[in-house]
Image 1 (cartoon, rainbow, N blue to C red):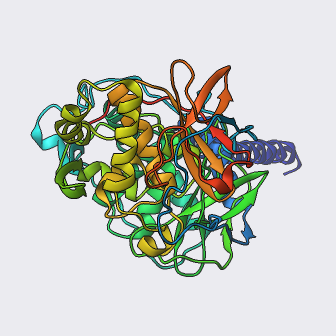
Image 2 (tube, rainbow, N blue to C red):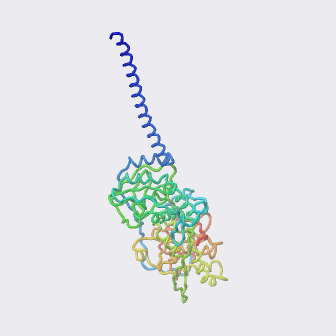
Image 3 (spheres, rainbow, N blue to C red):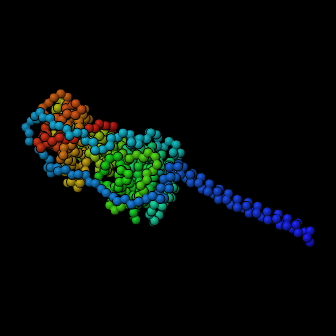
Amino acid sequence: MKNFTPLLLLISLLFASFGLTAQVDTLKNEYQKEFDEFLNSSQQEFSTFKTKNDSVFYNFLKQSWQEFGLMETTRPVPPKPVEQPVMKETKPSEHEIEPAGEHKTIMEDTGRQIRYNSISETKGKFKNVSNYKTMSFYGAVIHIPKTVFEHYSNDNIDQNRIADFFRTYAGNDSFLNIVDVLKSVSSNHKLNGYGYLRLVQQTASNYFSTTNDQVLFTWLTLLKSGYDAKVGYNKQNIYLLVCFDTPVFYYSFFENNGKRYYLIPFDGQNKINQPVTSFPRNYPGNQNAVSLIITSNPEIPAKIGTRSLRYHYDTVLLKYNQNLKAFFDAYPDCDLSLYFPPAPSKIALSSLSDYLNPLLKGKSTIEQVNLLLDFMQKGFPYATDEKQFGKEKYMFAEETIAYPYSDCEDRAILLSHLIDYFIGLKTIGLVFPEHVSLAVQIPGNIDGTFIEYSNQKYYICDPTYIGSKLGMIMPEFVNTSPEIISFESNYKSN
């Protein structure tokens, strides 16, 4: 019996060794399985985001949010005459007024506004009619990819829901395809930053039925297009907030890192003043402010509207582009200098030409300026913005042609284009403390009040001062120094 003891011990040790090896192998397999699962998960997450920036930003969205109080600024309302003032002088006399400096309350357009390469919006996107659907954008028929997205419930509005939306679509090929199409459409229709924002908002309603999802779609599209945008939420809604390149009035906003983020209302969302919860960190990369600078009109189809004026004994029928007017009607209230450059539409200029060209023919330059000045003074009824709109509102030239009334700044803007278009003379805007007027550069010297700018004399040309001629200034502003608005006209409009 003793002879078998060592053998039994050896056999026991061998079985124990085999068991230990089996346990090690099992444990190793479990670790390898967990590692493989982690690796696959990481690869899938990277594949979902496609870029490291998206992955990093997603982590921000999952963690860092805070409450921001909202503020609002209103446009200052300088005192204006209730009735249009009438000339009190008999003739102009030579007088120089000193400028207070150039009116620079906005950021200059130095290329921050995103300009996309002009490419066909359908190139490589749609193979046949079943791949896209159409929508209307201020009268333009836009083709967008036919895609069905997941719709989220309106319950549980919080940062997790917003982060999940970002994770779902930030790397989604169908979504990114739509972004490419919209950038191309924006280029084809010559939209500025704000026009692109409006295009994306309109597109969102074609893919999502709930306002919160539309907001999230618009936000993510702006981020992927290189614009600086955020979202915020309260118990009821998710809100879009964008950074503009110039101050805006009547919009709620919060400040973060020296920038203002303005709340952009969507259909069904009421104006709010209570705080919203948002994230302080920005999307990685160079994000641009949404530009409100507009040097030329967007290329959108013409829908003719008409308006009758009474000038002396004539009834003048003016035409304008209703689609362009609607685009400008929705424009945020911003600095006065932004309203001068965009020209009236080709439709409007054509109808003005039909009436004014015969009257201007054969007249001297000064006679032509005085005729256009008289036409603005007496053909366009005057009323303050408070009376017409209930608030201070500046109008683009197309709006002044369309609306029944206008006040000083609106008339100055439109007259600047009439003088440039029909006579080819350069003008500058003059911003007095309580009035906006115009001055025109006249070759040679004439009697009248002038202001010197860029070594040139510009003579007062006031479209609000009834009966005044070139060079005549309202007496109360004779010793007042105005700010100057300098701009370039552009008549490549619809």
